[in-house]
Image (cartoon, rainbow, N blue to C red):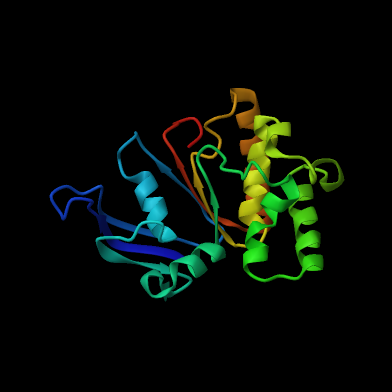
Length: 201
């Protein structure tokens, strides 16, 4: 499903390599953790998968397609991305945040509403109770669930997660990690998660 072949990234014309010759093959339904200290290139590697950053050399394939030949915005709509620090739009409601990518893809309103309700329910957020709330009205754990819902809303089968649980307290983090792992297995999602936390990894 995702293949990285001798992928390198340099930000200074090759003098130093942020990522040096990475080879990875990630199967459909696999949960892969990129674990390492700050500055080791794990987030850069993650960002190259959906072309937030382009590799200096090497190749990346998504479902057998060369990622460099896929228009970046179209590729990103196919791949869910959960940001470090959650990254919800503060001026949008929970439902509007979750609906962002389906709207970009031109889904009709009924399909969007049904899918938003479905993903919120999957993540333990009753859409009738939470759909009209704004991010500031949610706990940290609830905000993180909305971030995951947004990443899944367009039925993406691949999710990239950049330290998604780092801002949560230990008890909430553990609960959400367990919930997400069960959800990942149930839906057969392909997940690449970046963390520096050995316990989380």
